[in-house]
Image 1 (cartoon, one colour):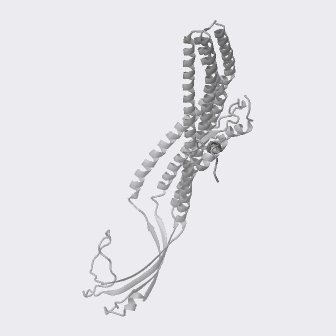
Image 2 (image 1 turned 120 degrees about the horizontal axis):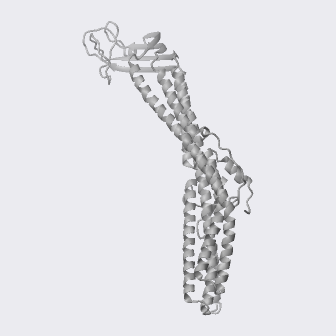
Length: 474
């Protein structure tokens, strides 16, 4: 099929337009993943590595309690051995040595012949310690103290992650408000610059006014670029806390741009704060270790029962028997015993170890007292910041209204030839700052509430308040 020359440009134009349309439909950047603050907190608690690590530490500590309980079970040991070698004995004894190179033999001293022969033996030993004077119970209590402390550590880790996510989310919202305020300021200055240029072109204003207006527009654009940069950095920081590095995230504003209800939270006792509970758990761990040492010097009373069999290729007369005699059992024995064992000199080492643990306990107690002081200070600071944020939010509408009136009046005076461009620039600076202050004032109350909830040790009241407050106006 031949295409006429007149139709060829039309087809090319259609092809180019189609390609441009397809290109416009392609995504130009990474998709933004939106979160509410509650969703961000839940996601971080479920996925952040620090939380998972604390859970595994708790699992290990809980298994440690089970391990300590197994000490109450009897020990059942079995052994079987077959060997071929000579049996040469001498009178006398040797103290135990390590490694066990000089092997022991059984039997009377015979003429030295260095003849090899087969021997074998097997046995089962059942041992159990019915009385331990509280030592095993103290070990279990020590393991349980570690389990309790690691459980409290989970709550503290979750609180830290939740607080960090909430703060990063609200900080990102604040960055977005700065971008919006900077954009509004730029738009306002551009409108004024165009009117100034019109007056200059009409020779109603000197050219210096146009230059000043252009400079103000450029400076405002710089502030907008910086605000956009801060917003991107805040998004990256939030993504990092969420464990979504490389993903662009955003926060749904929800109710955080309006004034929260004036609810007062009574701070709980500092001793109930997760950080205090964790530190208190460390004190309990040290006390449990001391209790173990208090029971470590008592004697150990073991009951034992043994069943064994032996076989030897060598007969009692010294003659060699058949090889099967050394591979089977020709003599069986049983034994039962009660053994009391005590390290008579171990008390000196135990006494020094107790001194170490007692010093560690005193150290942890002082750290616990320091934690209580820090928690109280954090609560008081958060309450002061909350009160200050509410007072600021009450004042910013007055600041904003007065700044708007001042900007309108400065602009009107300039157009009437009664004011200068410097007066307008100063009025616009005040208005830009007032708009930013007003947009951040209510968000600052929410941030102070989040800090107060974190200082109290539980972010749930803050999240519940956010969920129950409808989104919308101021």
